Amino acid sequence: MASSHISPEFQKISFGSFRVEGRPACVLRAYESAQFYSHNFDVLRLRRQNSMALLGPSGAGKTHLLVAVSNALLSQGIGVHYFPWVEGSGDLRDAVKGHGDSVTRLLGALKNSDVLYVDDLYKGRKEPTEFQLEFLFDVVNFRYLNQLPILVSSERDIEGLCEVDEAIGSRIYEMCSHFLINMRLTDGEQTEGMNLNYRLGQREA
Image (cartoon, rainbow, N blue to C red; front, side, top):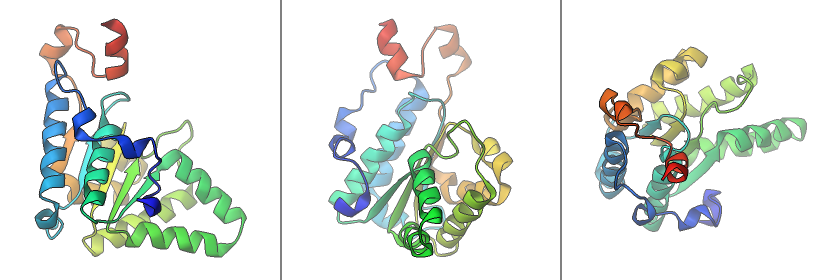
């Protein structure tokens, strides 16, 4: 747990603390898929499609569910490395300004962990730099070639990820295709006035 880079607050997150009552169908589907994934990881990790992606707007529960998956895997003795895109990109910039060994160590940790969780991929006001994309491609491609699982949350759908970089997006899609949930409201749910953002839904209630 100490080497996972999951904060003490996030270490408290579990499936039991996730509310599904009254939530949209895509949230329930994501919840059930995340539980199935964590319970069957020993078998799933041997497959080509051994990864999971939750894609959708802020507040839908993506991070909660994938942190719950991470904590469940850690409790089974499976190593997870948590890499929040915004903060991690800042760490990467600092490493570049410092010594090359820092970048090499970070690259090695992201490549070789049992499971890599990239949280809020491409979130931020600025588009990723060429260096960030090269670094990310190196990590994703290594894990793709070596069938090492990756967990991804992002506010962009697969098309949006591919618009940033098709090589990275297409590899993530292939790895996650059996456990890829686009968290979007149905037309009926929109008509009923349901809110996918749990935090805003709480305010309205």
